[in-house]
Image 1 (cartoon, rainbow, N blue to C red):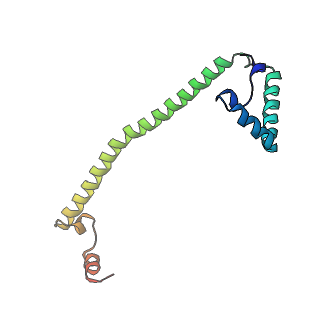
Image 2 (image 1 turned 90 degrees about the vertical axis):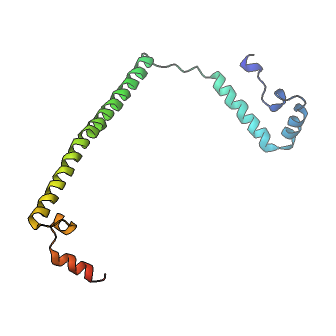
Image 3 (image 1 turned 180 degrees about the vertical axis):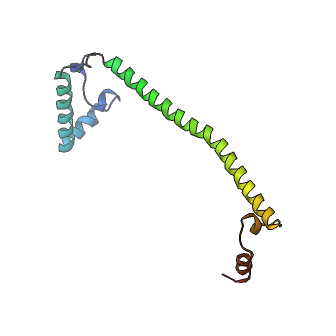
Length: 132
């Protein structure tokens, strides 16, 4: 079917709707204006020349996709390296914290949270005795 032979309206798609569409067109000024606007738009599109892509369009699209893939892989590499570094650093920090807490308890000669965190005994007593 050629473009020029295409008719606007619902009556082509649904049988026995042509009369109701024509009646609605004759009754409504807005509907007639909309039909005229659609016909003008269709004619404008039909009269225009088909657009073409520039030279090497497909190659440029593929290059852009590959560039985005490279960017994603570099981001992935960065976050993977952070993830790989986190585990040993976290283990070393936890070991250092435990060693410091153990040394504090050995210096005090007692096993308690106050000794582990090297808090003076007076502060613990005043904190526990005084209500907030």
